[in-house]
Length: 366
Image (cartoon, rainbow, N blue to C red; front, side, top):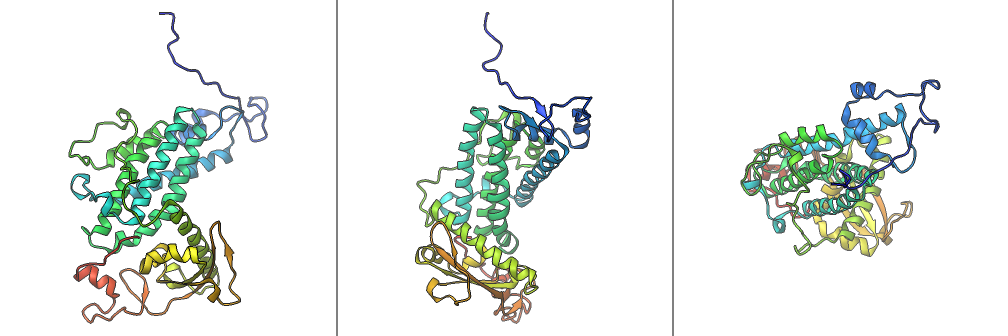
């Protein structure tokens, strides 16, 4: 019919080695694709292609492929964690309404929705390296290093059917549904594997389709713009920035042998007024964000003179970290003054006693 059998054509640069030389047998720098497929698998090779800006020369070497293998494992491990955490989650009966979700769970859903919008644009414009960067950052920074790290305590310590646990599972389920679709054009075999392990019944009660390759973008991410929330996106950016400072202080204590891990620590964050306003909303739940046994706030001008002040994009902080007092709860591993207070559970803190035998703790934020 005098029309080309395609809509658009992409051209790409030559594949070159780490020194920028073209690959040839005479130079001995050829990397055989067949060998890579056997040793690394197709998905890692596909991830390398996706990560490269094809508009120029595409550099490949064993070192670069090793980095891609590491990036792939991180993305895969994020997916594995999500699947494991929602193993008993039925979207049709266990989902928590957005207005009832904990604040940090709503943040995770909002962030997922933002990234999906970025990816839709990147895929549409064939900016595959931006696809790789966005997915990698989301899995490693947003999820593994921040969100999933914080909600572990809630998953392990709260009641099986508690609001706190089901809220986290709702968010993780939505993240997993979106993530599997994002990676399908690139990590096709991995996406197919993930698809088979997601809940087979969807939120509307219908059955999951046979293949992720029959799907398009995930349309189940709720728009939370109109949902009342005490925390803005800017608030969460400030929380993340302060948490990074706290983590560095805890790492210094670990190196000095004062603590073995964050749960051995007590921190006091001396902050400027704008940060106190944000962090103060967390109340006692601030310790769950920092993953410490205790966490408290104080004015910046009340800090010890020897304590270093760190300037952030918005505000200033100085972190005072030390070993926490109290006894270790064998269930949550927090060092608490109230451990053993309940005679019927001499090795548990009162929070865990409530989660085991009582009404359970009330979480609203983290």
